[in-house]
Image (cartoon, rainbow, N blue to C red):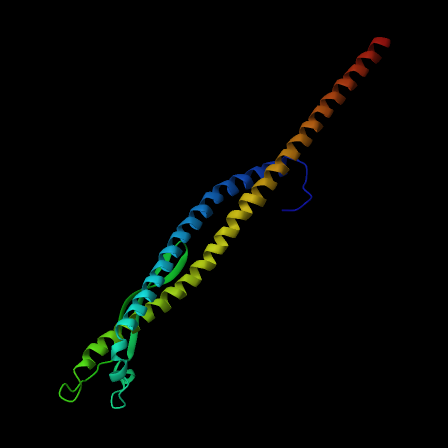
Length: 203
C-alpha cells in the first residue's frame, strides 16, 4: 500500500471497499491453510508408514539374501514395472496424483527349473516396488502442497499483519482529516456570517 494517500471522500470510500474485500479474503486463506496442513500431515504419515513397511520387509527377508544372490537367477530382470496408473485430484487448489494401480511386465516362469522361493521373492519385490512408487508419488504431491501452503500462509499473514491494519489506519486518518476539515469549514462559515451581521448592524 502506498505511503501517501489522497485525503478525500473518494479515497475513503475506496479504502472501505478494500477493507471489506480483505476481511472476506482472510478467512478463505485461513481455511485453505488449515486444509492444506491437514492434507500435508496425512501424506507425511503415509510416507512414514510406507517407509516402515519397506524396512520391516527388508528385515524379514534378510534370510533370503544368500539364495537371492545366486548368479543363475536375476530377480531384477524378473520384476519390471510396465506402468503406473494414477488419476488427478484437486485439493485446496492443488492438483495432485492419486495412485490407482501399478502394472508389472508379464513374466513367464518355468516352474520346473525355478526354485520354489522365487515366486515368494517376486511377490515381495513387487510389493516393495509398489511401496517405493507410492512414496515417490506422495513426495511429489508433498512438494506441491508445501508450496501452496507457504503461499496461503504468506497471503494470510500479509492480510492479517499488513493490508488490514494499514487500511484501517488510513481510514482512521482520512476520517479524522475530513472531520477536521468539516469543523473548520463550519467555523469559517459561522465567522463569515458573524462578520456580515456585524457589518450590517453598523450600516
